[in-house]
Length: 116
Image (cartoon, rainbow, N blue to C red):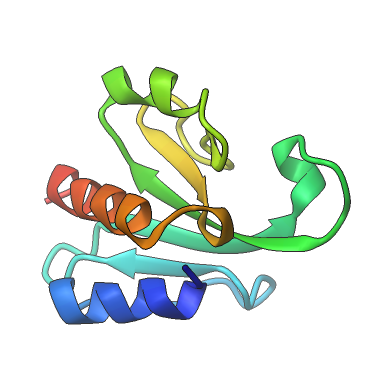
């Protein structure tokens, strides 16, 4: 799955358009609820090494809010990490280029529901 596909899913299912709030980070996009403007997803492009992976190649990640009881087991799987630049207790980072569409969209939906 690509960042563009994540944006398409967010648009189709939640009516959310990516918001680019940081001029200094043009590749960072926030997905927000329409009324409350609360975040339910953040996409960033970062070097692999920031996730503890080998190399400096840029990758797209998606931060989603998640049930803390699930985070511990999910980060044991490839493509899942403790939250990058978010609360590690309530947020999870997904390496979207390495996970299936179903994995990404289901967790984005969970995040949307948790942040209502």
